[in-house]
Length: 158
Length: 383
Image 1 (cartoon, chains in turn brown, green):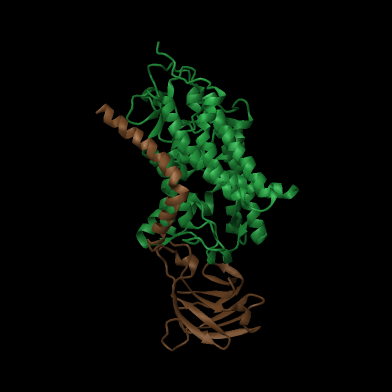
Image 2 (cartoon, each protein chain N blue to C red; image 1 turned 60 degrees about the vertical axis):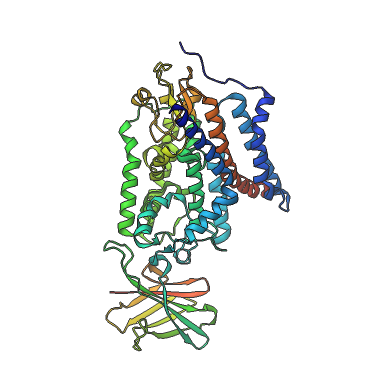
């Protein structure tokens, strides 16, 4: 029995060495692929959530994301809906758009912003949404920001 | 009285022979940097290569582990923030993370967030960190990359990550090395439980409020890496906490106690990593038959992992990070490296060698590349 445990112990120590040596050549790649295949996503309070629809406008498009709610009742980031104006370079000096989030044909809020100044005024046309008057980032759920060549607006939701 | 077990000093040539695998491994690891155009990366890679090989050679020659490991670890600890902040300044002109970068998933992932991610990932398949899952052009330090690295380190070294891999621990270990003698000698042992309490609190709170609480509120190393842009009273308070904890636990207390106080009293990742102490095949044992309780091991353990009960039990606590300080200091060779499943005291040097080859292979690959990268930037300033 002592010999067996000794063999197991030595095997473990040698396996540790092999793992350390194989790490940069094989294991990192395998583990990364494995983690990538797990289907994990960045929490929508950071990423903005899944894209629900894309609305084409003259020269630019509006990418509307699904509503991001609270995962738990104590989540610090309040519910919001995100819309991206893409590309920012094609936007006029002043933008005003009615956005239909759920695709029911009725606009849910009216957004007006100036891309150069990053100031936004959003009027809720649906009682589920809150008005927004922001210059830059107020919070994670109420903001206008330039992100990767687009203008991102997050409107707070009731 | 039992015979001494120590190997003692080895000859130069025998030490060189034992260092040969490390030399070959280091040449392989730095081959890409050595082939890069320009003098700075080549010189940095060469200096780092020489540094890690000489340190390992000294480990073999003197049979001391911790003294030489510490040089590497402190170099890593001090050079990592320099290189990291250098890149941040070059990329965005500031150490602060704007919300825009968080939304676009460009926050570099840090291993300290791993314990906080597990519950939300298991329950909701989402990661509560503003990074990216797989590496992108704008964020090579993606979550999958760092988690993979941590997995390899944990499988190979277990808790040894805290002595060979953690790029933060070297900062406080550096400050702990400055003073010759500790000003504060007695530390209440109950503080040892603090990292476990912090771990439990941040894991549960993070899952409940859906954000990495430790990163947002408690991480002292935000002071020397990156922190949320100060835009409100809340972010100002966060910055104040980061700086205070860094000054207190990473600089002042290590200077006064000669201990890694942040690791011993706060770090939830250290506590988390202690769980994997059991997975590594090599550990440290204390031969109670040889031990005359002189307390040298207890006084020299940087993470408070040895006390009288541990000595009586014949093994350090699970927070032992395999630094080898107790083995090096023990005048009677009672503290020994040990392969699990074998009798304590039998094959101590074999256990040490197996542990060191694995640990140094990882350290050179990971920490060595960080050291070389920062050195290259610094050398680039003058050549």
